Picture 1: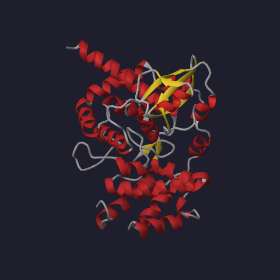
Picture 2: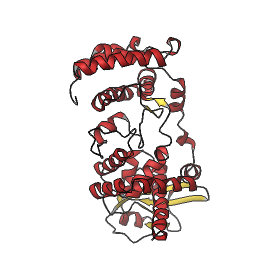
Picture 3: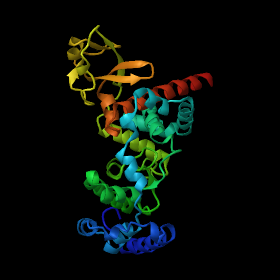
Picture 4: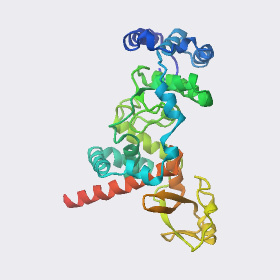
Length: 342
């Protein structure tokens, strides 16, 4: 089942697909992507390359609905016009911290096991899931098939990428035996507690509870293991620091900051231009210097390898900073509550 389409699965899926399309999608609202100029090429890819039934793929495309709100959202991503101060207020609040402690208490065993197996701290896993979906409370409201079809067929700027994700999505639902119309997520087609796009789902999602399905959509234990696996596969280094406030010489050229997410210069090289981390660290460690427009003025930071790994999850310094700071605040409150209860 993982690599081929079995005839019984195809027959069952076709029947369910027809019911889902007929019941949930009035004809007047359909884009009918099966009639799109690129549809036949996509269907041939799925049938010849992956062995799908052509009628089944055609049914998926016919049942996918164009969403103008998706096109509007991707055309003006909120983060592009947001300061760090505003961004931080969205993701770091007492309620989200308290919910993180609750999530940690509920899934303590899975988090401890993930930390032991992958070397990624429990608090970092909690921080990611907290920023992404508020611990599963907000996984998105768009059907994934609608998001990927809309962006694949009607967003030329990145159509190739999203058609690739639609291809990955159909492979994913076959492998995990999901109904293609049943999954909801973000406007960009990200799913589950940790908001994996389909290619990341197939590459990094793991069956962490041993039930023979990697389900990060409905299963928080699988999501915990999958986030940890993602970080480990992208180079998280156990026990190494993430970021520190920067101490500056009296005059530092602004050109030294925000030059890229990936650490390139060593701390010794940054020190020569007047930028040092608040903590004493080995000079050969590579880092990136950041200037963020915080709520109380400019903030200066030094991010190391593990900070860069967080940005591999979402290519944004503000995202990585929010996830990391949330993780630290949740950990502080969690450990304080554990000490108080002894």
